[in-house]
Image (cartoon, rainbow, N blue to C red):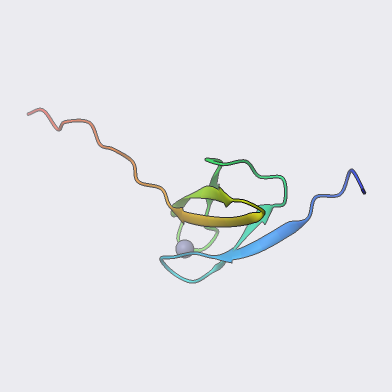
Length: 64
Ligand SMILES: [Zn+2]
């Protein structure tokens, strides 16, 4: 096992299809930002597979 080097995985932004780099040791729920459109993306781990999905931010009530 090699330590010290971070493998980067490229996923596609679901919004603009830009390549988004994800560290191999990224954790579930980690937030990455699309370099192209600035969309916040959440890292989703599924077994050995890592993918991303658009982060849904719950907005507070608008009030008045
Ligand atoms: Zn994007």
